[in-house]
Length: 319
Image (cartoon, rainbow, N blue to C red; front, side, top):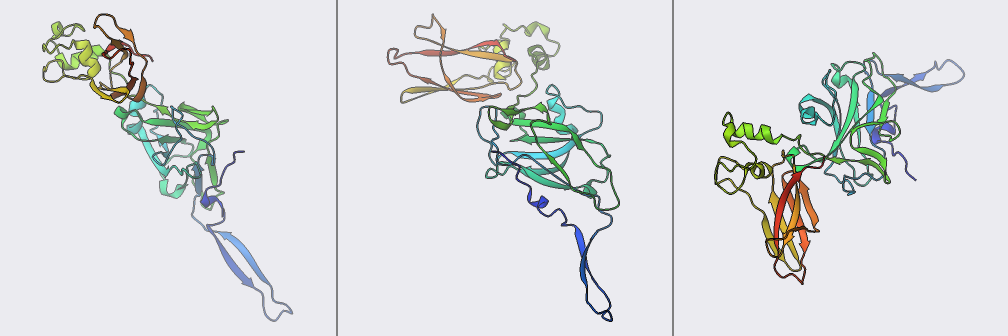
């Protein structure tokens, strides 16, 4: 069974009310004591927001969320519609109204927003929830961005309003990035890579008008790396001292390979092995790290092949 655990601030929905005692005249044959609840004036209201509690939330690899995640409530600049394709602009177009750290014990986010504190937000503004474990696009952060039709900023009022409650619900939210209600998970974040820079654009940035040096198979700096490989590695195609190569570490019954790469490259790769440097074949390997800027993988040693060579072969990236 899953259920919504009410944020602490919701437990007393009349927390912002005043109580006045009213006494009737002692000349009457009885004394009457009454409690009257009157609202404070000049308070626009409170928004309670967050995610469902005591449910499973996971990242793109199925790992359970931890306190490294935070969720923000906010809005994007008027006229800007966030999409997966324009994600590099989200941060600059975003206005945060509140934030909450993930409670790993209660498996939820919970926060409140006082609408008086944001009096310049126009009524009806579309509100989003943005859950993430970081902002560094080169490290492949996990993000969920969602909205819902009822999440519209309320109009300012002159008296206390009933508390507004906005909670993630996989049946009513609209996902821009991420997923919901799949494989037994409530919210599922997505690993985001930077928006790719095409190889031709990247080479133009390095060579400018020197188009004669920009062919993918050329090696203008003579370091043994053609331009296509320099692009994949993120090294400088005009500087022979700027080079990259895999780092190999043999430990016990496994071999570990680490390769730094250009986080903005569209290129993909295939890991291949050979025992004679003539015949190459794809090799099974376990990815330890698959960040846009770094690949770390592990290969189990084959006792029948005491000597093996490895190489990364470029291929078009899978989108």
